[in-house]
Image (cartoon, rainbow, N blue to C red; front, side):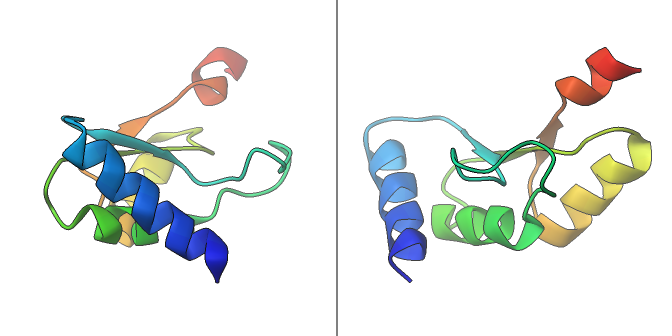
Length: 88
């Protein structure tokens, strides 16, 4: 789909512009935070980075098991949490 192509293109442009890591949020800007984060989308972006820079995943991190799941299913090297830390 065109969104996958755009994700790939944006990842590569950021890397070639000098980004030293990518932070990837698994929702589109149109999706509400009540919708589940898309781990396959995060994995696609990690794969698009081709190991050229470390990737950090973001979205639906509420507890340690969520961190493990995101790292195992997407290949991100780091995980970022926001609402999950503030809501507890």
